[in-house]
Image (tube, rainbow, N blue to C red; front, side, top):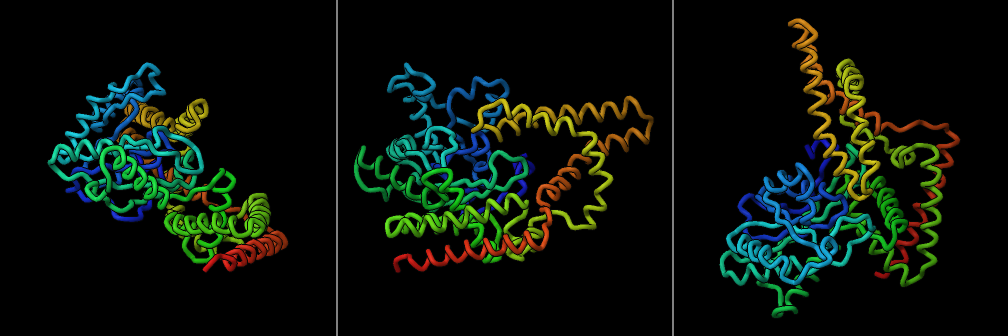
Length: 411
């Protein structure tokens, strides 16, 4: 299901092997329940996610959480009367699970959020490792896994999973609380080293745009390339602000001017740069495949228009930080029921073999429509030569400002 929700899921780094044992995975948390699903489905080993206890009160979700081996944690923000021993039994079970070779996924920020940077990490993950080590069974390890989304609220957007280095808890220095703080600091450094961050949403957006410009010129528009360049851009931006803030302001001015005109024209940066093949590389259907699937896709659009928009409508009324989760959850209810109704109607209203053909169309047509939607969403408008020339001038100015700023970086 998660590979239907996202158009592509890219991976960087080494994911855990199927025989991984006694490991705590720590991840950033910006996309609610989508985050654990992405991590769990990208890893080859079995992982039990740690989740807030309030999720078990949602009908249907508690069954899924139990099937996934999820572990409930009571947060103080969910229970103001929580005392220090509220999670003692849970921590003991987790420590035993890790000590026996099980794996745990935890989001140490403590909550899903939409901030442009990592929130301060809590010490729970490190305490779990310390308690597991005291069992003196499987030596515990930990690994950061970062998640990036090009449009986290959008159906058929792209996702990037970045696996960090594996750390042995035995190598963390110190004793007691000092060791817990040291392990938490390592986790935070590993996650920050994988993520593209900004001080504000506007700052991160500009970093993302500069990274896109550079990735386009490098001929690689994957999320992996964007992430690698974006982290370098973020570091350079922070360095340049301490050297000469006017250099950064100049880049901001020209990049903002270019992208404002780009959005007004409805074009992609690759088109302006004369690298339209980079857009075509991301288009999942060739022309002949689109033509061959057109009749089936048209049936899919007609039959599934209502269930396609219904999850969107439901998600608009929900928590903005859980938009993708609500969309996916609603779709998993609406689509199967709708498809079952169409199949039942086919056999009730039509004689064979028409009923069999109609049922087959009802089952397969939404997938053909989905492939067509990918093509429609990625198609960019064309523009007049004058508009293209103006955009190209603005792009050259922006790129020149970026190159001049790079030249001011300390060697």
